[in-house]
Picture 1 (cartoon, helix red, strand yellow):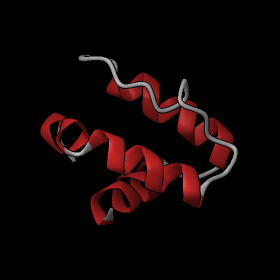
Picture 2: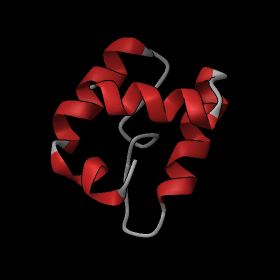
Picture 3: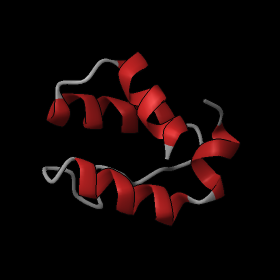
Picture 4: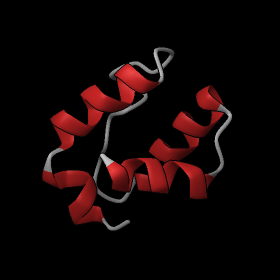
Amino acid sequence: MNTKELKGNREEQKGKLKQKFAVLTDNDLMFKEGKKEEMLGRIRAKTGKSKEELEKIIESL
């Protein structure tokens, strides 16, 4: 997963992630350039998923 994938259809991906994991908020999914790891860390903490699992989920959106 690269930065372009996260930036591409960000709003659509955010919506799908929030549907899949109801515990996520807009703040959890806030993506800032250079802060991808921080965002993934917030999502991992709330969902209990590994980095690899999250990357697969995001790639499948």
